[in-house]
Length: 514
Image (cartoon, rainbow, N blue to C red):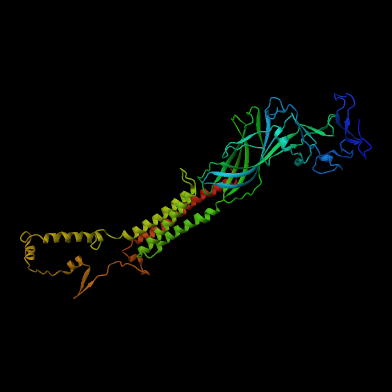
């Protein structure tokens, strides 16, 4: 029996009816909702009897005058005996349940070479089918098929572990997660036990997709042999821990990168995704290729070190008599290069092998060291160690005089007649010849005038004196100087041809992605 309300003359629409006698398992006196409709197939009957398209049901827009088309918009029909701790059975017998894996990488906020880590932000999508469920009124627009928070907790969802991430990171259904129904199969019209018109989609033909946004720190084994002309391949591993690989399998579907391809230090190369074999749990590895942008190192490392080597080499063209200026400039270049080498080494991880940049810096230090040694040999190779005017000869002469003085202090009569006379107070004069005077002091006789002979090499202050013909300079080894000016550029050119040839070949290999 229906009790019409005021202003309602026809029982069309959804109204409450009272059962007067036992009927279809309903006891007398019970109140049930019944819908009487004049709407055709594919139409939805509002509670007031108005007809609208069934596609407009639960589409987040009000179409019924009484807004009843947006009431009771549950998308999933969960059976009473459903257990969300038991995974669904595979749709194909004797096969494992397929969990389709899709990853959309959004950005790489940080790539730390020294810490051997990188941080990535990505969206992980997992798609599967659950034959135990049925879905109601699915739309082609997937954003309208999102499950409510209550329905997400009631159904089974896969659990994936990020195996090589820092910390214990798993997939979750926290705030921001989405579980959507994906319309893939056809629908059937709901039976009479439904109080309203519904289109029912089978869980064996239509999928569920879970998506969540993550920001995770991963470890990466950087291979720095060719630094700074290197490329790193870092791996993100995902392991399905809901059940063993014999029950369910991760199926790689798509790996996509939507962020900037040029980062601060790296450029993002291609992404690859594959299944890891021989695992107890099904696992997927996503490989990301980071190609280092070496322009920064060319500007801040290679060009400055080349300039330092050129400055040190330029000392070979300084005044050969000005040893102080030549050696000071070369040593200063060596000290600056050493500090640059230390700074670069501290900014990189410690490795047991030589990196390509280490070879360059070590070569630069050796080149400037060779300049210092050659400058020293050029200046001192012409000086005989035991010449009369050498420091060693003068030192031996002072020792000899000192020993003679010790002999003169002995008692009279114990030495030579000359020594005895000197001891008794008799003054004996001895006229020195010019040769003896020249041997004891750098004086020379010129007629009746005695004058001090100028040393062959004067200390240079301020602007150095330039000789007209350096080949006449016997204080500097000019042949060694000329040889140094030729051999050092030859060594530099040969090394650069080998070094940059290897670097260019390696960079071309990286550009081809091999």
